[in-house]
Every structure is written in C-alpha cells, then in structure tokens.
Length: 366
Ligand code: HEM
Image (tube, rainbow, N blue to C red; front, side, top):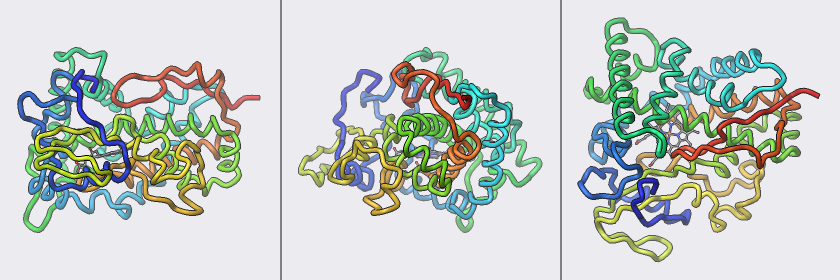
C-alpha cells in the first residue's frame, strides 16, 4: 500500500466479487495496528463515512438514500450535464489541455449544479480532495486541516438548505427517508462530504483516462464520430479497461473465508480487492488487453466491476455513467478531429490514489 503496509491483494474476478459480496468482509478498519492505505488520517479512519459502515448501519443508510441516485432520478440531469460539456468546449480554442480545462471541470461543475452551489466552488473541492486523497504530497497536518475545512463547508451547506429548502440534491437528501427514518445532521454532512470526495476526482480521472484510451485507438474514435449513439456502450469498455486503479477499499475479514479460486483468508486478515485486475481477468473477459468499444454490445460478457460489487457498490454509478457518456459524446460530436499534440509517451501521470494524466494537450486544428 502507499503507506508501506503490506496486504494480500485479490486479483481474480470471482475472488474479488466473492470478497466484496461476503457478509464477513468488514469496512471497519478502525482498530489500532491494522494496515493503512495511506499513513496518517485517511478515508479509512472516518467513522461516519458511508464507505466505512457495516450492516446494519450501512443497510439503513443506503435504504434511506435509495431512490436519490436511481437512473430515474438521474436521467433528468442529463441535458444539464450535456450543456455543461458543450459550454466548456465552446469556451476552448483549437488547442487545449483536456485534463485541466475539461475533464476536471466537468464533474466539478456537475457536483456544484447538483448541490446548488456556485460553479466556481469546484476549485475548493479540487484543493480539498487533492489533499485528502493524496498519498504523496500533502503532509498529515495539511490533510487534517483540509478535512476539517471541508466538513465545515458541508455543514454550512446543509444548514443553508434546511433554512431555505429548494430542489437541489441536498434537499433530496434532507427529505430522503425510509418510512420514519431519516439521515441525522451528522450523517447528512458526511454524505455531502462523501459525494464530493467519491464523485469528483474519480469521474474526472475516468474521463481523462477514457479519452486518452480512445485517442490511442483512432479507428474506434472514428466509429464514435460516425455514430455517437455508440458512446454509452463504449463507456462500459472504458470503465472495464481503464477503471479505477485505486481499486476498491480494503476489507477486514471477520471470519475464516474460502475464495472461489481455492485460496483462503483467515479471520482478521485485511485484504485489498483489486477491481482493475478483476476487470482484466481473462477468465471473465477474453483477450482482456484488447480495447474494444463493442465488447459490451455484441456479446455482453460478465459485467465489469469498475463500480465495485455488493453492498458498497458505487451509490452514484448511474450519475457517473451519464457524466462519462455526455463528456465523450460532446467531444466526438463537437471536436471530431481531436488528437494528441505530442506523443502518448510524453504524457505524465499523477501518482496519487487516483491515477490520471497530469495534463493532456490536444488539438482539433489542421
Ligand atoms: C467513474 C466514476 C466513478 C467510479 C469509477 C466509482 C467507483 C466506485 C467504487 C469502486 C466504489 C466501491 C468501493 C468499495 O466497495 O470499496 C464506489 C463507492 C461509492 N461511490 Fe463511486 N465511483 C464513481 C463516481 C461516483 C460519483 C459521481 C459519486 C457521487 C456523486 C460516487 C459516490 C460513491 C459513494 C457515496 C460510494 C460509497 C457507497 C457505499 O459505501 O455504500 N461515485 N464508487
């Protein structure tokens, strides 16, 4: 792990799914001495974050929020998300940095739109998520300060929406209920925090990695240009091929567990399920190293696990899919001649938990 701690890593598709679905894999890693993803305070330490809950608390949380992120709830946002993508591209010249000027801005602006905060606030999310997710640059003290500032911001947002209810995502979360059960104030604040940390850089880096991959395959890019309706299924292959290398979060086994591959983990073991490896397991995806935008159209294989699996499966997978699809659709329709300015080898990559090009200079000129 980036912290220097060593843990076993599950790499096979069936093992990863079995681990993530197991009632004996816990997200409570808040026991002194357990391995850590990053040293110092990190996501694993937050006792209130959704991702760190086990049943019954986790089941309750998800039940209350069920309905907030269903495709039916998300679909009405699609035209607004497409408009953000279009406006961003309208503001760019022939040559631009696809990462800084597009991939990072789009999800930042989407989350601002959904939370009902000014578009410019996304820059604060960048600073906080950078600090909080980083594994190498920020000091422990800086990370702690970023976290505290971020939580104060989320608390203020919730208080504002309580005082003046509207129709933003926060209002939906305030109203969300499971019969008589609702989210407490602390849970609401934490949910806003989780949505920003889980939703911003993950989506931005996925857009950046996805466009990079498509530009390495000009034939497939041309197919999308000729038929933009293919974008939604192309996005599934992008998610499989270039899914989150930061992987799922670690799990602590609460009971001795046998894995489908024949391996076993004893109670107390902390294990990392590697989603990206699972998505490249040849037993689940024939010729996994072949990037093929038609993979999920012609003969749908096993579903990929880029959004995880089991109880903690990405709460906002439908939103992420809409963002990715609209981001790429806007590029293929408005910038059909898009290509990298320099060689793919010259692109430098971040070394944080979320892996993406630092910058990606592209052109649409002749
Ligand atoms: C392409 C973009 C995204 C990818 C690849 C992704 C991936 C994932 C994965 C793999 C998990 C499960 C982690 C685990 O089980 O250890 C997860 C959980 C989660 N994601 Fe996403 N995500 C994306 C976008 C988003 C967005 C846009 C939001 C919110 C606006 C979001 C909110 C969450 C939340 C709240 C959880 C925790 C769910 C729980 O613990 O029950 N994600 N995501």
